[in-house]
Image (tube, rainbow, N blue to C red; front, side, top):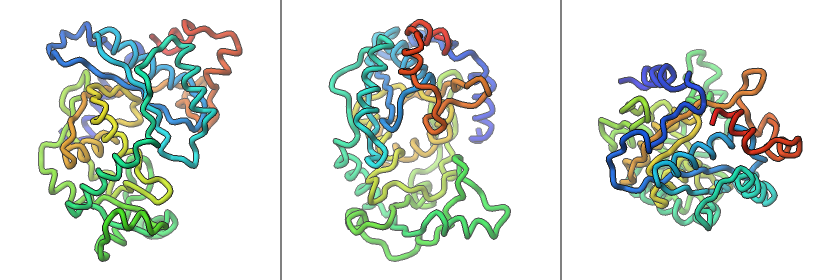
Length: 312
């Protein structure tokens, strides 16, 4: 099954359901004796909105209904945007919703060494290289080719300008500053081999197509690990068995499965849920200042109101 057809199939079978239409694990005749582990992993770069509430409540409910564990992870690896007041608000908002999680919450900023070890392992396999190209450099190359492809996030694919330059150790590259570390997608895909897929709840096996991302950035001097490398390492170290997250991360799962195979990490089961939209049909986002949970609380909303609004 090609990735594009898998996405279409997923949308037909899952996306058009109401947000609360997921069958909980307790009603799925789950046969595994392994305790299920779910997680909610927000970034403290803004206040939580209804979309975050839905994902947190869904994960909490799924864990509770199958006798599993519910973890909270603070994804504060981008130290330039993370703020203590936003992290404090996460705890306050989740507690207000009636959620409880295992303490302490894992904070990515306390585990840079875990991500560094993963990068060094990829480096030892000859799969990453230094790149000093700017976004403008890449855009200029793409601009002269009307048919230049974009990655799933809409950015022009990297043209490979630095791929064949002499390579230096990852630790040395990051210490020197001013450059990024990219994954050599061609080499990585060849090493991973065929049959790369993930188990999607309600769909079955989905064929992964990480090549859509091209030579992605895995680290920079100011952010020593990308979201993609950090999330697969964190999920493995925390024993996460089920990842329930928004459909906007569906395509990223191909890349995550590639990294999991290269690093010999376990693959959780995934369930990508529909997004909560505003009155204009646009997805809620911090970047567009969607109404925060704390503002709704001030307006008199209750946790029950939130559940009704998101379909739970």
